[in-house]
Length: 254
Ligand code: ADP
Ligand code: MG
Image (cartoon, rainbow, N blue to C red; front, side, top):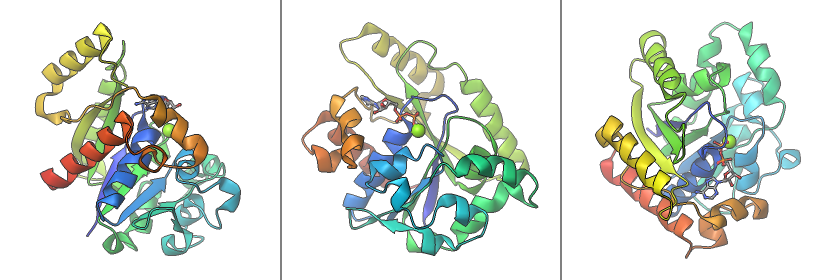
């Protein structure tokens, strides 16, 4: 049964989508059957693997509301082992529409249970909020991966996220674990990056991934070509880092 990892942090611009796309692609080239679930109405994860909103036949929104099966909504990508459940801006409405539904926090969990056996990894790219969509992701997930940008205030908001995780564990998903904190946009020439990284490691110890994602321009260029970085520039530092992260996740086995 595939393991479900939610990539979450209510802060925007910390590398959630970049991590979702490139970790998913890196797991897929290791021949792990991988599904990238785009749960952000901005649909950057979908376009980042070459599926534009207007091309998506069916979407995460429709699958969430039970209008189509997840199986029908899944689209192929340019990587054999990588599939995507694409989103469009209609997901904005889902936050509101779900409020009136019975079992509103478990819609994604139920939807993904139909196809879980067909994948080794299911990664969910969460929106930058702790609203009902992110709650659905945390309820469906086995674990959560939290990208943290190596800058001032990196830890700001983290206690709110930790409280939400604790609440979900108590009320909705006792098995949810913190899979790890991922340091992103690390700049080795910048003292601040080193300080932030040390502080986070002191605080969270072995819950921080060994792999650190460097600031790398190739990572920011690749999405405009609709490609994960390993297809755009396999020799880049960004590609190397996400391949190492995939290896770390596969090797630690959960
Ligand atoms: P989020 O999904 O958390 O809002 P994104 O993954 O969209 O964050 O990243 C925010 C911006 O930073 C994007 O323009 C992205 O291309 C860029 N970015 C993310 N990670 C890196 C990195 N390691 N190096 C350089 N640019 C990055
Ligand atoms: Mg994003």
